[in-house]
Length: 128
Image 1: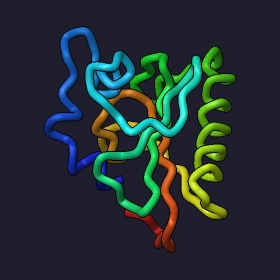
Image 2 (image 1 turned 180 degrees about the vertical axis):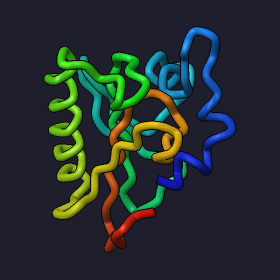
Image 3 (image 1 turned 90 degrees about the vertical axis):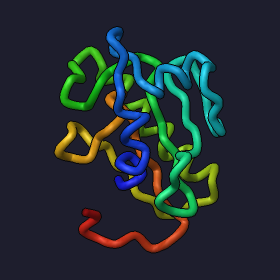
């Protein structure tokens, strides 16, 4: 989504330890507008929303992108999607879009797996 590219210079920089801006958010070093949190994930409002509702759902485990998920992540991946649906409903949406960009060519700029939840207006197709 374009919100990732708008934040690309700051968000895409990864430290030598592989850390990202989302890692800093998870550690509480950077504040966020959280809408959901549990032991597996955190959901918060995107700082550059592309729709009236734009929430990111991120796992606490640092998986860089969907392409790096393994069979051991099956339950976590399912949990992220269920939380995305819960957050959408909590935000009053009856229809919404979920997006996972995996890799730079797909528009991913923050290399910590995340699910975009977008809604609150009609969304065009194709998206990009």
